[in-house]
Amino acid sequence: MPGLRRQGRTCALQLLYQTEIAGGPCAGDMTAEAIERFWNGLDASRKARAFAMQLYDVTHAHLPAIDALIAANLEHWSLSRLSVIVRNLLRMAVAEMVHVRDVAHPVVIDEAIELARTFEGDEAARFVNGVLDRIWRVAGEAGSPTVEFPPASG
Image 1 (cartoon, rainbow, N blue to C red):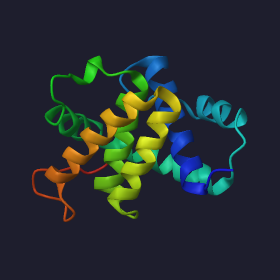
Image 2: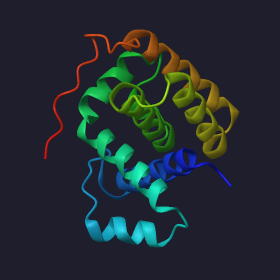
Image 3: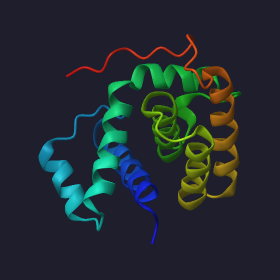
Image 4: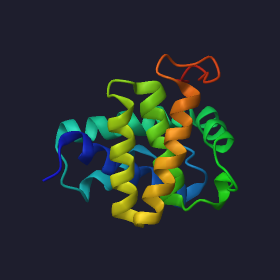
């Protein structure tokens, strides 16, 4: 059985995926009813759900800045060319590394690599590793001035 954080990340990724497939670029427009239906279909602890919702909410709150940071660190790719899974996995990992910051960045990167491997395979895992490593070098541990997130709305 996966740990609380891994379970939460997996659920958050699935929720981000579902949101984008249902209505656009991870727009955060899922209704409370749709989110409740999502959770009804999963066996996840209350703490894993809370962590998943934290990642989901933070990702949405800072989506334009996150997408800009990812796009600036893609080589020979555009954000729109990435699979929905990889795009949302990168978004979620960047949100956790730069905004949540309660877990060391190597752990976040390793977890993202494992999720990429699980959902998309080894090639995606290598790609995610390279992009997140590049982003971390730009963002830095102290939260470099090049990474500015606007205040969360709401």
